[in-house]
Amino acid sequence: MRTTTSRTALLVAAVAAVSLGLTACGADEGVKDAGSAKTTAGAPAATATTGAAGAAGATESAAPAAAAGSSAGSSAGSSAGSSAAPAAGKGTAGAAAQGTPAAAGSAPEAKAPVCARGDVRITAKKADEVPTEHIVLTATNTSGRACRLLGHPLIAFGEIQTAKDVPAVPASKPAAPVVLVPGAPAYANVRVSNGGVHEDNKVVKEFNVNLFAADGPAEGSVVVTAPAGGIAVDEAVAKTGYWTPELRNGADDF
Image (cartoon, rainbow, N blue to C red; front, side, top):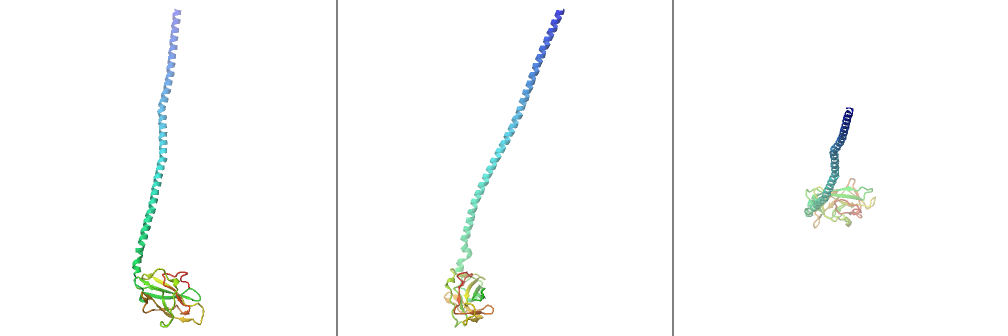
């Protein structure tokens, strides 16, 4: 009986040991399986993160490319605009240049009638110098229409029948006809003396100015009042410049 009981106890102990071993193996494998499952489950998360990072990288890579494309497009547009702008400017300048003669009315003005003495108002002013050697004549168009002022003023310092003709200075002759639109002036510089007191000087308080017609001196003349106090005139040295739209340094200095 004791032997049977001992064998039975040993068998129970052996079975229990085997059961414990199997249980431990199962537990280890379960742990391993759980770890594998965690690892497997974690893999998609890592993949998703990698995919997100890749997408972000692709977006960042695409952004410079898009910016570069935008810059290239802007540069191309700017270049095209810049190229177009000079062309437009050139066309405008060309149109303006082509329109200039018509706008200036050169053809009608060239055919304008010659200014008669009734078409202009002539005044005299002393030059800004001491002593006075020159006066400036101003002829202003008062006719209300354009007219051409020919040649130089025909000046007589004294009686018109006996006064000495005042010669003109050829260097002061303008290259183009002097056409005065209504209200426009023309000028003539006139030397009246060499300045100072001279026995040949005479005081003139008014004098006559005549104009040229198309075929020579016009009929009649304009009486011009001398600047305040009169002017001392030496007919031996008196000279006149041509009518010009403005007084020019050099050509009108004599």
